[in-house]
Amino acid sequence: MRSVLHDFSPSSLVAGFVAVLVGYTSSVAIIFQATLALGATPAQTASWLWALGLGMAITSVGLSLWTRQPILTAWSTPGAALLASTAGLSMPEAVGAFVICGLLIALAGASGWFERLMDRIPMAIAAALLAGVLARFGLDAVGAVRTAPALVLCMALAYLLGRRWWPRYAVPGVLLVGIAVALGEGRLSAASWGDGPWLAWPVWTTPEFHWRSAIGVALPLFLVTMASQNLPGVAAQRASGYQTPVSASVAATGATTVLLAPFGGYAFNLAAITAAICMGREAHEDPARRYTAAVAAGLFYLLMGLAGGAVAGLLAAFPRELIAAVAGLALLGTIAGALAAALKDEAHRDAAALTFLVGLSGIAPLGIGAAFWAVLAGAAALLIPRLPRLSSGTKS
Image 1: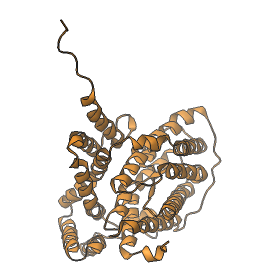
Image 2 (image 1 turned 120 degrees about the vertical axis):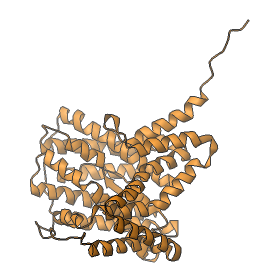
Image 3 (image 1 turned 90 degrees about the vertical axis):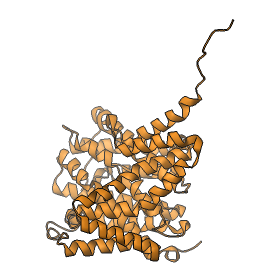
Image 4 (image 1 turned 30 degrees about the vertical axis):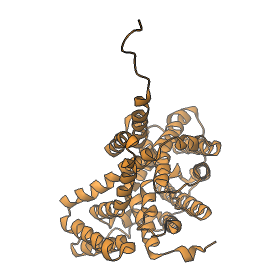
C-alpha cells in the first residue's frame, strides 16, 4: 500500500485549506448565534469550536485513511441554525438533545437503512443534486464582482491562466492572487487577531435528558442533519465516482457526536460542498490520491479547533468577496462535471433538470434544506410518468 507522503502533493494541501476556509467562513457565525441562544459563556463557546474542530479532524482523517477516499465531514449548518432559533432551553438540556441526536445518527448508519435509501437514487439525480447545491457558490462568485470588481476579476484571470499552464496549481494561484490584490487594496486586515486567547480548552457540560428537548430539539436536529447534510454528502461522493462505505461513515459521525456532545460537538455529518473541493482534479490529478486533500483538511480542522479563541479574528481578515471567489472558482470544474453527468441520460434529463433547479433555489420548507426537496422533486418527475394511464372510455 502506498504511503500517505507518497500520495501527498502541494495541491492537496491547498485544496484542504480552501475547503476548511470555505467551511468556516460560510457558517461559523451561525455557531456563535447558536451558543448565544443557549446562554453559553465565552469559555463554552470556545469549547464548542474546540469540539467541532476535533470531531471533524478525527472523522475526516480517520475515514479518509481507512478508505483511501476523500471523505470530509462537517458540522451540521442547518442544525446550528435550528439551535440559534431555539428559546427557553438550557445548555445541559441542549447537550442531552445532542447525545440523543448522535445516537439516532449512529443507528441510521449502523442499521444500513440510510445507505439502502441512497442506493435507490439514480446517478443523474445525485449529480443534479450536487450541481444544484454547488451552483450557488458559482453565482456568489460572479455576484462578488459588484462590490469588488478588481479583486474578483484578477482572481478569475489567474484561474483561467492557471488552468492553461499549471492546472494542478490553478486554485493555489487564485488564492495567492486574491490575497495580493486584497493587500494592495487595503482590504486584508488582521487588526482583531490579538483579541482574546488564542487557544481553546474543553469545557464539560453534564447532559440533562428531558422529553421536551428530545422531541423539540433532538429529533428535528437529526432530521435536518440527515436530509440537508448527509444526503447531499453521499450524493457528492457518488457523483464524483467514489463508492465510500456510507453506513460506516454515517455511524462514525454519530458516534463522534455522542462522545463530543458534552463539550459542544452538537452534530457531525458528511460534507458536500467542502468535500467537493477535495474530490476535484484541482486537489490531485489522480483520483486515487485525492484522499490526501481530505486528510490535510482534517489537520487544518484540528488547528482551527485548538485555536478556537482566535478563529473569529482570523476569518475576519479575509474579505467576503475573496472567500466567495475562491470557493466558486475551486468548484467550477465539479459543477461542470456534475451537470454533464446529470444531463447525459435523456431518459432522466427532465428529472435531473428539476432536481438541479430545486437544489439551486435554496428553499427550506419546514426547516429542511433544499437538497431534500430536490430529491423528492426528482423522484416525482421519474415516477409520475410511469403511472398507468387512465382509461379514456368504457368497454362495449
